[in-house]
Length: 365
Ligand code: UD1
Image 1 (cartoon, rainbow, N blue to C red):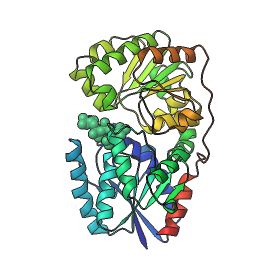
Image 2: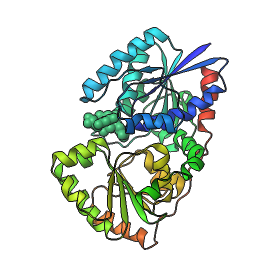
Image 3: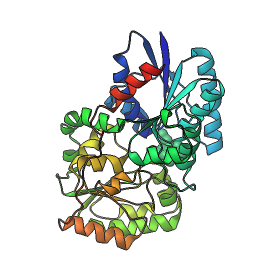
Image 4: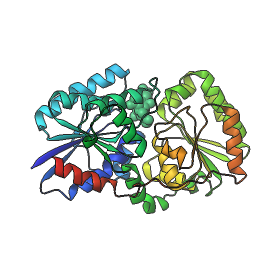
């Protein structure tokens, strides 16, 4: 019996490991799959609800590291995860995405001579001021198997000198979750509860430090909300970091005062998917949501200067706007007037990526 440990830590990890867990069950006679949750995200709304929605088993190990500076958080994960590896002696560790848990677990594993597979490898924003870009570069530099979602990822890794035989263009595991849960999400009552109708609201998510940590950015966001709310109801599930910043900078009250702006708690996977699929427009600075909107054909404006997921702009429905309020409003109003960018679904985003990854893991382990 071989052991594979998959590491999850933050909200965007859960929907990536859930389909892999299901796919690995098919190899249950020869592979034991262990899930380790670092506890980087710990609020019920940021973590537990995803385990329930995605039918993920309780993590076998919970490290409970919580929040802190990057160094504190990364170091705590490393110390905790090293003990897990000493105890469980896995044959391979799977990490996903680009959060602090990803790089911390990778570093510990390779130093202990345990092979690492990175799901969502090769994505590059070429912006080293993003903590995620550093996490991506370091993880890919030391991983043994690199599973890539889009062709740009393969090119980036090759340019960085990663041997071709380590790289596998397999598609997007997050789309596996999306396809699998689309029907279940359809029966969510969230739109009804919020009083919004299909195609008549704008869904917003914002949590990047570059957008929400400084008061200037928050003020721009509030002025953008004021203009958009005159044309479309806004639903904004507020990330804990963003809520804290709104309050800290004294901008929360002006946001609260905007009619047609629904500031709500972070949502579970099924409720959010329900709203995403039915939105008229999505405004986000998330990585994964750029991909989900491309898959769903929903117009997406990304409030960042760059994206590590260029395929969503090249062939999908995504457009980059930075925090250029004039551009965001112009593009938003185009969408409200029915002039939206049409897109296609990238190759291999077909719902079967985790099966392809499981088969490769089974052959390499
Ligand atoms: C992390 C990821 C980011 C990902 C995001 C999704 C890194 C470097 N960043 O950012 O790539 O897009 O998750 O949400 O790994 N907090 C809570 N409750 C929680 C978690 C966080 O209140 O359950 C608050 C804390 O005040 C914390 C802050 O949010 O200090 C930031 O959390 P952290 O995990 O450091 O990064 P995120 O901004 O969530």
